[in-house]
Length: 74
Image (cartoon, rainbow, N blue to C red; front, side, top):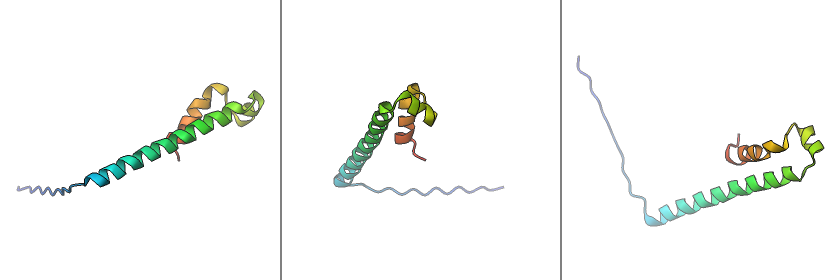
């Protein structure tokens, strides 16, 4: 029994400007996620305990909910 294995790889060089653009895009995306997190925490923290209870949220869960909203969007 003869088995054959073929492996093809492609390599390409990304220029310095493209690397800088990619890094800038990553920084912008991270900043946007952080803004969503901070806004969510601020808005939920501003609600009263009764309003949070109506939403089914305990005050101790605000940061976890904000993290989920910012970093694990569905």
